Structure formats: C-alpha cells, structure tokens
Image 1 (cartoon, rainbow, N blue to C red):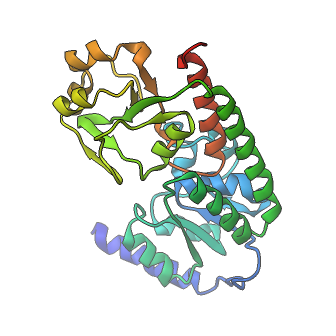
Image 2: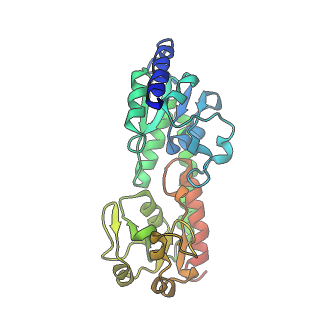
Image 3: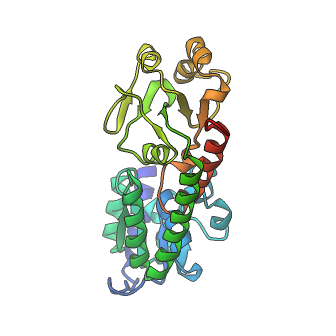
Length: 284
C-alpha cells in the first residue's frame, strides 16, 4: 500500500511538474532549493535571501551545520523528492554521494534543474567550490567577500600556530582514522598538526589499538568528548591504555560540523582551531 501511495504521489508530482517553467540555465536562479547540508551553508552565504526557496532538514542540525541560526529563517524540505516540488524550484542543489539515487531520478523525471555539490578534500578545493557556487547563483561578488573572510581566518590561525608543530590523528568510533585526503586533515595541517609517520594514507582506514599506541601521535583528535563507553566503537576510545597516554590535555575536540563542508564553515572551523592552538601550543 505504501509503495502504491508513493508512486501515486509521484504521478501527481509529474503532473504538477509539467506546469513548472524552468529558467534558462544561463539565467541566475530565482527559486533555489538546497537538498544537502553543504549546499545549505553555501546557499545561505552566497545567495540573496529572496532566492532561497528552501533548505534541507540538516540546515538546522547543530551537529552538522554551522549556519543553523540563519537557516531557521527559511522553509525546509522533507527527505523526499515529493517534498521539493511544492517549492517550484528552478535550481536544486544536492550532493554527489549521499543523496539517494531514486530521489535524484525522481527529480530528473520532474524536469528539475539539478546541480551536484561535491565533497571537498582540501582547502583549495573548498575555495574553488565557493567560486563555482557563487557563479551558479549569479553572485560572484559574494564569493569574493566569503573568500576574504576565509583568508583572514587562515591568517589568524597561522599567527597562532607559529610555535606549533606536532603530530595528531583524528580517530572516530572503532578506530577509524581520517587520512590526509580529507578536509579534516587539511584543517589540522593548517593548525600545525600533522599525522605521524606510518599513519594511514589516502582517505584513511581502521587502526588497531596496538598500532595507534605504537604510532603515538602527540595529540588524539576526536569529534566529541567521550567519558563513558556506550557502544563497541566507544570502547576503543575509552580504553585504559588510551586514557593513560592521552589525558584531557592531550586530546583535541574537533566537532564534525567543522570538517564536513567548505564555504562559511571554514571560517568558523579555522577560528575554532585558532582557539585550540592558543590553548595547547608550547610557550603559550
């Protein structure tokens, strides 16, 4: 019954979609819908408020987004293609990998103009993405302003980390270690925190507890402070051996919302790391 109802709604959406008049691809969009947490943040920073028809549900999730306060001013979609249609968008921004393919197929069938927002793995990629999205939205001047903010935040962090040259690994539940091909690693390098010799390369990989103790980075970087294990994954991070080697002063908390996306979250992330470096850097 649910499957039948879903396709019945889809049929209505197709019928409604046939009345939509898509704008020419070269024209700046007038009704933008974001269907992705990274796109949410870029749209809030780079679009005119009147262009924003709706953001994704993730836009106000404080664990994932750095623009929650501003995002609350806009409507939000649901989790389905059907929830996008009533906003009559002439541009939908969505992710490459974690937006479900059936949802994308339905949007294409509706004739909606789609623009994928890819994951960025380094600072240069994030800066290029700001240019691309600003041009797509018709506001290159907003890219220049945001890039100036990012450059200023990088400068503040560079000044703070002059005496900082340490090794660090970002470890998640179960011992997955983020590799150098990631925005998180790029941010850590900006803060003077580099992986120790022998750490996983590329996107990273699982590191047994014994290997982590052998690698012995100066700092352990975590997405959040974990005091009491509540799963098999957190047992790894609360192991007595790690507690002994990494007391609170040798643990750095780097929340997930700072490592997912480029755009305006870079400014917040870089300034957050500036405060961290001032706290842990030698001689301060």
